[in-house]
Length: 344
Image (cartoon, rainbow, N blue to C red):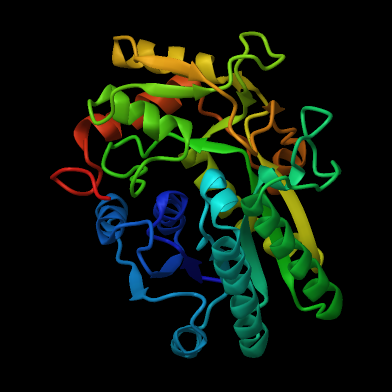
């Protein structure tokens, strides 16, 4: 399993995972269409790891491109990141999300089955749990996604479960992330969203660096300790290491589909994250509390005990570490991987 295909490997989580894979001795091949990423992320990956990445610019939904890629390499496993990921955008463009996120999964699985590469680590999401009634959430919780993004991940999981039932060669690890934040501690690799950020941390950091006027906090009337929503924020490096851990135990797992929550097991409110960021940055972040956002849940945090036990993985970085590393990236690279004004 020395050669791993990473789809969407130039993206936020994908690029950090490539750094950790290369550091762990894997050879990495990346396919990415740069829909929401930059070639400079892969340059940073190579600089940080001191190793080369084999790269193909292309779309996982394009069958000939994928078949050509598999014909050139003997992949031991695939890590599939390539997907659209903004909850709010998925509410307004559901068909685009289903076509891309589910379509790419179907295409990838067909080519994997055709070529006999049957080890897959899938980038899923805690959004598959929807508005969970019990927290912390473990892997036995009901699956009831409440927005098109979450449903695209849930449909993809169901497809993989059906495939594993039909083809006993397949081993699929479903990694259900909670809320990735932070950046590589070097400050040379981080989150660089195209357009207006959909997630809290990159928006907050763009306010702090002067790219945006103020942070809008969606909902101040939730039944929580300070009225703002609760999330399980996880450092992107811890998350990346979770993928390396999953690859490392694939040989030990039974064939089939296995889900794992990747989170810290601790819920923090939006305002607690803002306060942690303010302590790191050393000044207040302008903000206003506005109405709740469609599709958002009140409180979501993980029970990661299954990943702790089976994957032998544990998140070790705290809220301070997440904010420090994200600010290190944003303050060094105010406009991300470009030197001028933000992209549109």
